[in-house]
Amino acid sequence: MSLVTSKHLLLNALKGKYAVGAFNANNLEMIQAIIEAATIEKAPVIVQFSQGAINYAGIFAIKSMVGAMAKYNSIPIVLHFDHGRTVEQNIKCLNSGFTSLMFDGSDLSFTENINQSKILTQIAHFYKIPVELELGKVLYQGVDNNEIINTLTNPYQVKEFIYKTKADSLAVAVGSVHSQCSSETQLDIDRLKEISKEIPEVPLVLHGSSGVDENSIRDAIANGICKVNVGTCLIKRFSESVKNYIQLNPDVIDPRKYLNAGKEEMKDEVRKKIRLFGSSKIIK
Ligand code: G3H
Ligand code: ZN
Figure 1 (cartoon, rainbow, N blue to C red):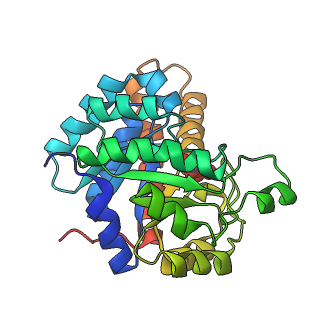
Figure 2: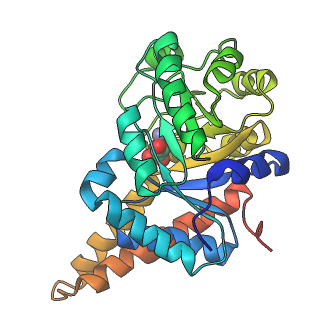
């Protein structure tokens, strides 16, 4: 089938109390790993690219690869732009055939975040493309606890933010941090409950999931998280496997062989995540 948008996928997840996995990719083998894993698990899936990944692989190559794989597949596949920092970057993705967007205004003031977000949602909605926004800020590894606490999403701001921006989904800061490898972080589930209570009809998004404890992820999904972003733990398993393969087979020069080792390892990780998120066997 053709690429689908994330709109109904996330609303169905909200109703069904599961989450759709949104997996970051950078190259052909990573896209294959994600789509093959989701196909085996019969799960809807979001393949997402950061601006850095787009700079590396090329926006049209990405659209062509993911679009072609979706066409010959029966599971719903979304092509999502992750952490778009400007409206312009998002418009380029929209024009190139991405079926889901994100404007990350987390460095802006509340008012400026609303103003810029609104510009994008108005344009994207005209083309029926949904937009994820961020309120609060999910930080990157290396920050201390105080910084994390200071950037958590304020539950008392979410209603106004959604009302004014018309976001289709909302990335919330509830204790996770990007780029962590050990899964030990406990999320602030009470805060998440308060956010969900304010905007029960809006699918919530968890960023920085690689570092979060599995039970905390389950609790988060039971309390409104409908999209879980996964990046670091996938890259880690992919790269470790490639390095290991080359170490064991120093004479192999065929990239298909060592990249395939990375792909198979990553596929296994994506399948585990899909089962954790409860989205396995959603497609009949
Ligand atoms: O937007 C991407 C995700 O939030 C990935 O986070 O690399 O910590 O898993 P992660
Ligand atoms: Zn993120």
